[in-house]
Amino acid sequence: MKSREIFSVIILAMGLIAAILPGRKNDSIQLNERELLQEMLLETNYISVDELAQLLISGDPSVQLIDVRPISEFKDPLPRAINIPIDSIFSENYTYMFDQNIMKNVIYGLDDETATQVWMITKQLGYANNYLLKGGLQAWKKDILDPQYPKQTASQDEFDLYQKRMAARQFFTGAQSLPKATFTPIAPIQGKKKKKVQGGCS
Image (cartoon, rainbow, N blue to C red; front, side, top):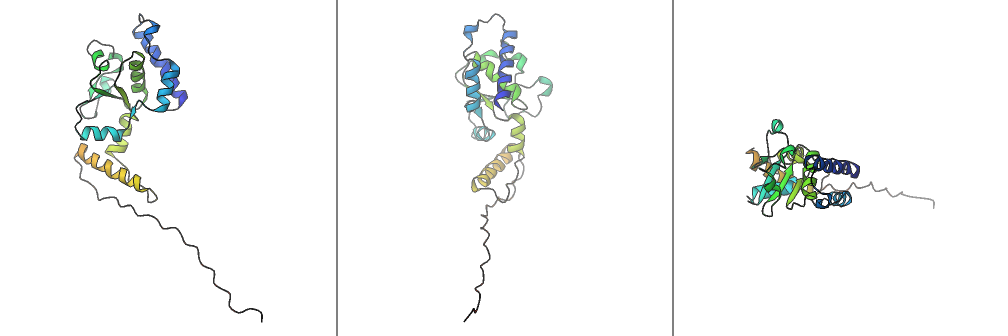
């Protein structure tokens, strides 16, 4: 997300707190707009789809996935995810899940927008251990469930990443693995050597 888009989401998140908790005093807000923007730009609040895939494959019990899509859109969720729509996050049934120091919450939606609002609200309220899945469900489907074969000009690191994503795809979908991607460095094009001119003036 660009800084202007992030700032717009920050304003929306603060508006949500003001609307949902009108009695909350301003001094209870932990971060201001500038601090939130800085943390978003540094991306310290994100977990990538590749990091999440490895955490789930390893069976890490400390990871809790929270899907903030509306109930009507809660389809094909990530493994072990629970649905807490944005309008329910202040419910007594769910507040304790965001305000705790044991589980690592990974918040996601279809994309980044709604999940970012939820994350910002948790930060403003001083809750810890809440992170964003970068790119949301769209990035998960694109990069983990349907990774694209690298271009012939791709680096060794890109081919290695593709292999990891294909292994993750097989783990989460049970799909048969495809042939191993082979990295073949492209040799530089050799220029034609000029032929020596025979003879000359005597």
